[in-house]
Length: 300
Image (tube, rainbow, N blue to C red; front, side, top):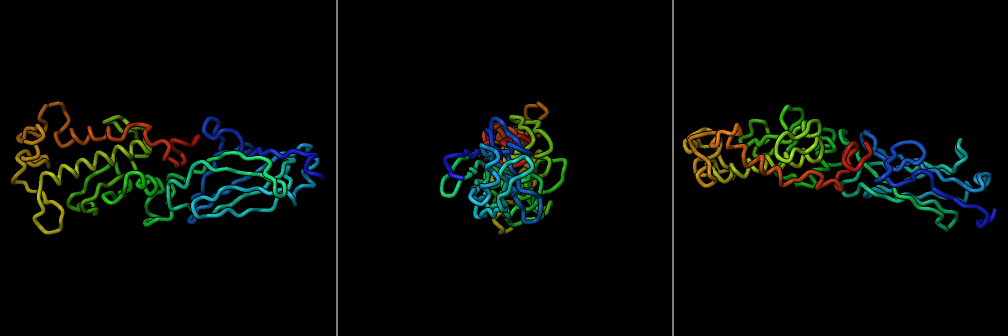
């Protein structure tokens, strides 16, 4: 058949992945890597042909194309006509990308010989709770921790696993993470009850990082390194109220060094500034960087 006698239109993906997210079936426009060790992304592509009977004559001349994800290039199955009478092809990408920024909006194309006949947008996500990212700690640290710490920076952070806490600054290594702000799984399970009250997920994670980093800052400002490891050491002799804020720090920041709760409001002095620091990460301020499934950008 001649090219001028038919039209080809993508039906999967289709629609606006932001306003009309669809995660399965015809019209799917959200695609997520699976949780296998290497992580596989399967994109089922479909195109309608008008007139419909022309589809059977075009399988050898029509091609589909999708964007790579990071450095991983797609491979394609052969084009066939499926049970719905549509031209169909599966694109496969193996291996999650290194960078969080490699997820997000992509473009699919369908063409006849050398001519592009249609393009549609879709979005790519990582499985939030799987542990198959390509970085150090793969198989141990969850994907959300690996990709979200690319947003916050990770040098002073560590993953802590399951806990009733959101985070903890381990100044002395009692938790096995010397001088690290430990982030626990609770950040994806529960809403933040303090500060700007971030919902479970990337906002609770970001606010917890800000909270624990403030504790680290307080500790560094109030105590000195006495053992030569370049990490301050707690000194009970300069902490009259035993609240882990040095007397000099409390003097300089308007706290009473003889009371753990200067203003008797039920929030200890140690936590006052750290809770306030959570506001450095406002709710929804990093939505455009959250490519977890479930997450801010996914239809969930």
